[in-house]
Length: 66
Image 1 (cartoon, rainbow, N blue to C red):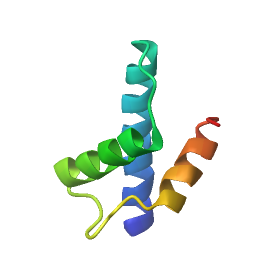
Image 2: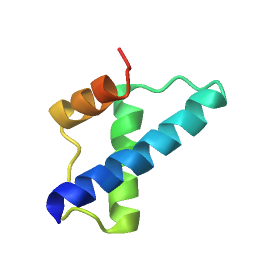
Image 3: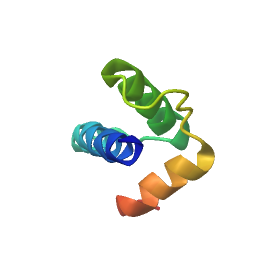
């Protein structure tokens, strides 16, 4: 269940990041982290999720970011 929740969170976050970049916004790691924590809380996906630097870095790499 935990792995599925992380996949769900990644999908939700990817959608929000795409929306923001389509609007011309530049997103820092800190902003993406904040978005991830907020989405996780709103959807009650992963208890004690903190969006570590390594989690955000992995997310950005998987999305094709630099």
